[in-house]
Length: 148
Image 1 (tube, rainbow, N blue to C red):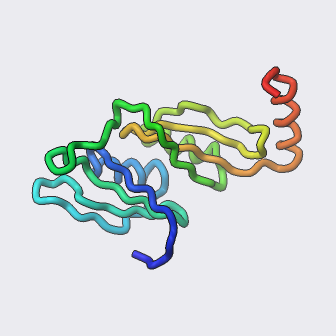
Image 2: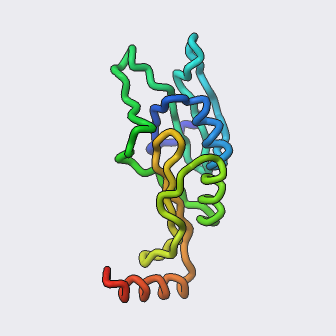
């Protein structure tokens, strides 16, 4: 692992090995390492998604009382990815088993934005910037929708 500083989300998952399969297929993650426990659960794993690192492990209720509520959810946390193409990212995640909770749309703040819930109960959002013309159209639509 690198010595760079920064925030690294650490997910507790019921089924970490299956989650790694989803994150590599659905989000384009690259597995950096995995540390299995004697019983096959994962004590630790690290993934690289774009420039970001994500840690995850299986839930070990016998040691720490159990912290994963997934997939019962809903999760109070959304993990966000800036991507080159929001529509392609949402399609890839959905094809891998995510549930689209907010289809891609042009937003008044200047992004094309969408959300999914992964099969493990974690919420992900995706966005890419709009062109100035697309942003102006999205702002106009929002202002005339009764929300602005």
